[in-house]
Length: 161
Image (cartoon, rainbow, N blue to C red):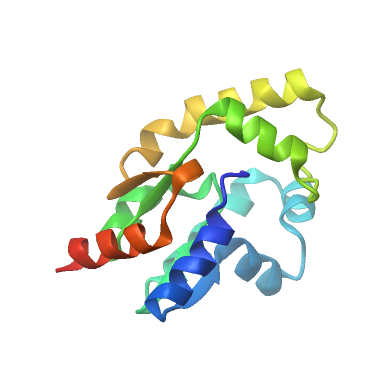
């Protein structure tokens, strides 16, 4: 959350001449509910099951950049499936930088909108601790704060050769 997956994904897709898919948007359009509302109404288990189905639906496409929710790679061997069906990229960022970006963000995110700064930092640290081992299975790891879309596009082309 807050590392720039959507922004970088859109720029990368444009640079490569690919389509762009945001799995969170696909989920919300398909189920006609915001993710937070769905999660609160139906629970995490159903959300993760359906989210995984959305991910698997993206494997039918070629020449596209897919941005996923931050938790998606951590469930049902999703990271393994992502790596088997494409090239994964982890936009790596430290906890303090994520904190500063979320605090400065005009978009208040539902999961963290009621947290004070200390609570938000603890939330970020907890989520990164839980998820880092999955994220680090990515084919390409780039520092999100100094990302170069041109360089990333070149790495993807080289990886694909």
